[in-house]
Amino acid sequence: MPATKKTAAKRPAAKKAAAKRGPATQARAFQRGTRQSPYKMRLVIDQIRGKDVNEALALLTFSKKHAAKQISKTLKSAVANAEQAARATNAALDVDALYVKHAIINEGPKLKRFMPAAQGRATPIQKRTSHVEIVVAERVGR
Image 1 (cartoon, rainbow, N blue to C red):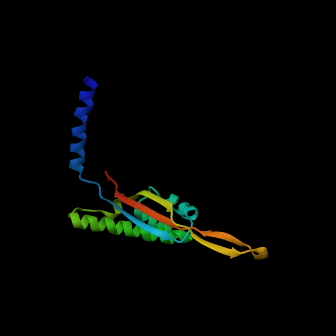
Image 2: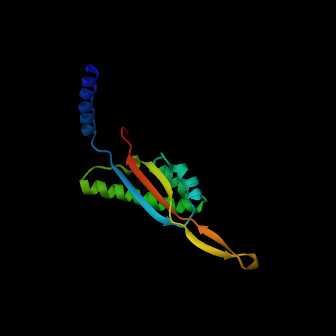
Image 3: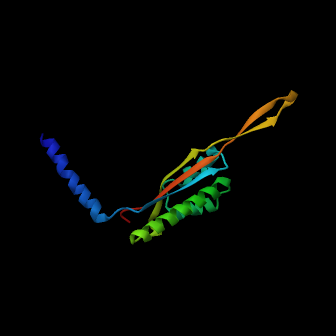
């Protein structure tokens, strides 16, 4: 029984500490149906996960990959969403303190096409699409 009382006593203190800090600003952005395969896009998104927003945008700007352009658009949208949310709640937001908290590429619907093959046959082709999801958050303790 005493162990339960100790853990119950710790929980309100943790809530009070979070309340003093204020809620960490978070925002997210999606881009659905991007016409590039998820495999190719994941190569780029893995490079920016966990980085500061400015560093991630610089990396995407100078990347040769086509996916970098699409991911850059989504990242800029997430930053704009964070600014808009901060403006709506009248909270202070330092854009330089934002970082890429969560960034994933999911598979979208495949466009199914057929290509003529030898002897009157047709071979199926799948043109893959991707869904980009990026969440940016403000670093706490900076």
